[in-house]
Image (cartoon, rainbow, N blue to C red; front, side, top):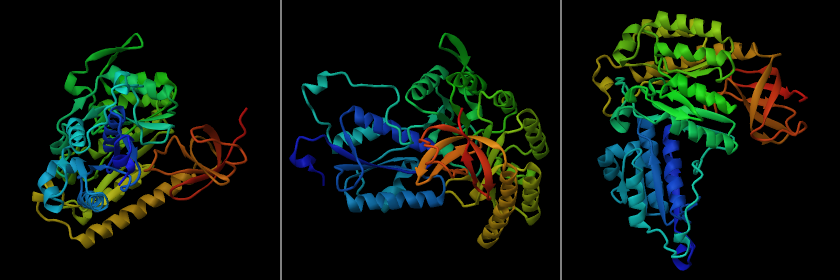
Length: 452
């Protein structure tokens, strides 16, 4: 254990954060509150007086990872508080790990803090407690200093048959637009160069509050995706949209990309291309219209990068329907694609569908899908050789600078390896123009262009 038990040092909390960027933001909020209340955050089990594990529970592999993380924390420390999406299945956690101190669901910050207080009361200092706590409105960030996730809402109103997120995070609850814009402004003032807008359904932003108007910087903004993007464009930094549902009004933000006010990038999960499979998924099924819209977006913003995710081997998917999906890839020519073989999720309606696809068939289709997309990706990246790409530096690695272009989100997309990074004296968080000299199916390679 830490030396807290034999010295007047602050109580110490270990923290394990699992799951998606939305869960990461939840972790940041909990960590911020812990810091405000005088807790030290430590990096090892041995140094911690108690450990908080923020779990994921979306798919079976995430459940397994979360249960393993809880087990490791119990074995290494003994005092464990569990929160996050898997917390909605407390009986599963208790069955595997009956010794956990507390279990709470996602965004339940009050329950987490109550559990921490019970296990490890905050240190009381009658002199320090009289001093107001500093709150810069940003709090603890788990991302590098030059980019940050900006969560604009919680929950989701959709009921996709493969998804259990609404049962974990509830229906859509949008944050007031002025609150989001103020947070973004503070992040920009703190040195953030790129904002990654996240939610369960970014394009539904504001529908629950009837697009209520709020004021920021003396101007009125609706709680609506387009208005939010217009406000964020005033900050002069990169803004990247994630988890965009393909509503018709998504078309309205493409001109902002063409005008350089918003990164020409859309993360828009299409999930499949067979109308029948999409209907089973309870997703929009007008594939022809989707292809038309993609063409229209590219005619307005030629540099737009479109990322999407797909599920192969969904219950009832036939070979012909899978071929439709491959044909869609060929026609859509998406820039970045992720895919996974369908896996039953406890509580999902899709589990009740007939004709499950054999596991061997699912894996074979996934391999064929990724092979087809790899060819498309390699060709699209090769077409950028000889161009100049604006990039943001993420890391320095020896002589190299590791960066991302406008088409690349952190963690999930490709990289740009800048060969003369050391020579050009590049720094993390710096924007730089890069001449692209080579490519593979994932990444670009080039040299920094001399700045004027």
